[in-house]
Image (tube, rainbow, N blue to C red):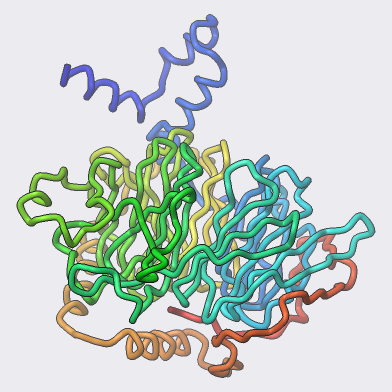
Length: 485
């Protein structure tokens, strides 16, 4: 039995002459062949830089393929939303997002002919942009968090429903049919044996389980990834507590006040991937959860839980980094790093199989193509990079890979000896960012990041789309400073 399991796992990363013969003779369906080929380790090791998309005038904080994979959308500190024909390496059009500060995420709603886009930003706003038939764009503010809003999560297959999370600890639910926002819950930290309302968790990430869209996970400024059931998320009216159905955390990080979650991702199999600031990346199976109240779980019971798979070698300290799965069957795990590289590990066994230089400073965003072995990334540079398996020969890991990983580990361990409050860390990171662009002045005040109780029924009718039929960059945008958090 063990031998068969090992053989099956090995097949996830192999595809060769036998499979090609089976496809040609009809023994293997073309779709199954494509999925096997897409997850081949040889194909992953052929990944190289295919295109560099340049038109933004600020750090690119978000990239996403549309459901059919032929269009890429990006958002930036310049507050612009850009649609790209990534295969042709050209900009299709752009429009102002309507946000007053750095765009953190832009998502195309499915089944809308790529005309419906939702965005969130450092100004706390959640906005909807509708691309009209006449070439204009209508944007509307749907809601506003108190503080920065980092991530959105679209209900799988829905052209209308999505969620947002923000640094105010709130999770909001949106239905574009009514253009209304409903606050579902506020996430709170644990004090003693109960979840107290005296301090909320500043949320950085929200994802929905593709196998069961009733469940969504959130992560932020403590050690726990919390999973909620949309059917029973309600706060306890007597105690004002939110009600997760499960908690996940590596055992050694429980009660650690100096870690926080920057990225989450669900695999096609329902596994939960969690990336920690200045720590490592962990893969949790559903049975590894601590239940609805982790403080009630004894140390002995925690010791009996299976240990999550760990992915290491990268460094996640300077920014709010994402993490993702890669491959048609989510066979790989991908992450950016403070060293400017893209790390690709096998999901099973965590073997590092590819390492690519993705940015001069930091790689933050990694977005897999919906069906092809294509990866889009961005970081502190003002461009989007597309990676494709076009190399003529297999690309081996660099000779100094061990030195790179050891340097990242040493930096992480050195920093762990210093105890800093979150506010001090934020200030230090912003100063570091100014060193990357010393001639840029910050345009933002504290008011840019604080919530307001403004009327949410705000419309902005924008000018016709700024179309670009050439590959020339727009030169009329003002340079702005990335916000690092």
